[in-house]
Length: 119
Length: 233
Image (tube, rainbow over all chains, first blue to last red; front, side, top):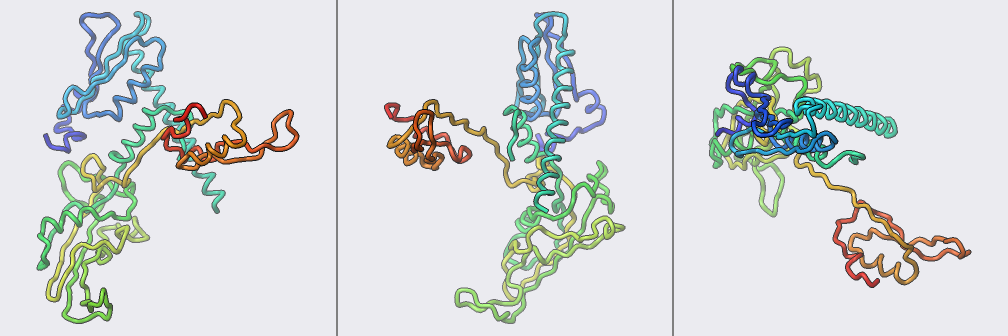
């Protein structure tokens, strides 16, 4: 497929339907797979790692089933039904948002300090 | 720069984003009016596309899906270089040079469209003026008009702002028991990156300083493990 399809959605409808989907596991409770469209290891690895830092997650892994189809599958299983995979995924995303916000602010502060010292 | 307290996956994600998803401005379409040089049109166009442009991408919009070029998303350059049958006075390797022998990126002139002159007050130029696009001989001429747009590395590598980006984990070197005297000198000589250094430190019980090995430059350590190879030392 064309290289630009790594980030380009052909139709708006495809984009609305394809960005994020959830498929609960038929064989196990508290397990499911999130399918992220037009993503790659940049997001997949990051999400998987953040999910593994959550103690209520029993299993977290990501896979890219085929290199020419630009989807990332993230499979999550939680310890018990108190938290569903969707809850846990949501909290992982929020935590990553906070962490990157802090990183961004610290970085900007460090640059401002560097500039002030240089001048 | 150093990131402290962050995991490798965030560092890697940052690295991937720096290479592929930070937008830049680069030449996309080239209308070649005259090309009598030896370089083929398409090769020339490829080279032109790779020229880095010094312009702030946040001041430009992405081109819309309709591919209609407006002054809000396109930057226009003009280029006209002709090699003349006169000597320019420079001598290279004993050979006299013609005027305009080399078509350089510095010859790209910016044509401000619409209100771009106020949006980009300091002007738009290529980052380097000395990139050779083609070498010419007398009578050969290159003239083209080039349109730039905003894009990111995932689309085409010419849009990647970073030449390369990499990360590694800072080695944590711990000397468990003090290494002194001759052994310390041997350790310092062993390390190919000269990570260790000798300092005269005083330890409790010894009034005078004793040459002890100290980790001076952990950043230079390439993890070659030379220092722990001979475990009897």
